[in-house]
Image (cartoon, rainbow, N blue to C red; front, side, top):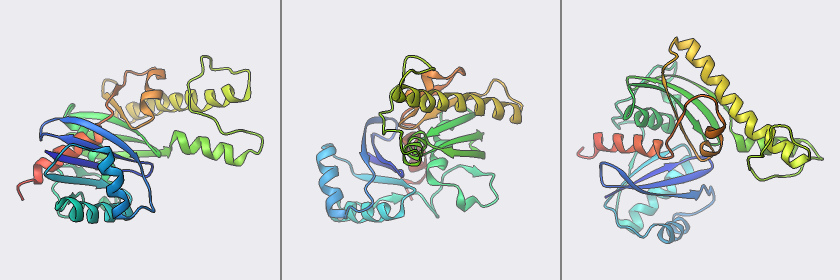
Length: 249
């Protein structure tokens, strides 16, 4: 069994795999100040299953280092970490390939398991719109994520309260909270629809498949007008594909 670890700016997602499928997954808040010992206490309480290998994709170097130390110390496992020297199978059409994040590489690898070409919407700390064609990263548009957009609004406007991210029943609200929820949630859905339309036009493909992932996608996708496939484990799917290309090396 292999434990797949996706370290994002907001959350760490763990997936347990038999090498073919993701059997279970867990989510943990990303803590920048936790030591390897503290991370072990959190992970031990979260994951009771046994595993004999670990693969990590991370965009937070300080957490990567702590996890690497923790798995070596407490599990006697040296994790495979997505980075230089790791075969991904993903080609990168980018001015600086080194600038393409590990999460986006996994998004492409994961989407390619299902479709030869697709638009990927990864809704995390940032919302990323990625175009992949035959396992090649063809480009991306990056927008502020839903949560940080909400925080920016609350922090910048003295009279606007902090709110929960819930979908209101109507687009036009009649109180401050429902009005803010509408603007944030329905506004995000409108952005997704608009970006999909623009990307389809730019690549001249109106029939391309759309895949969405990320913690907030399950809230936003049902409100979109385009047909979008939701896959909460897309990054883990991609990380598993990459693991399988490297496990015998």
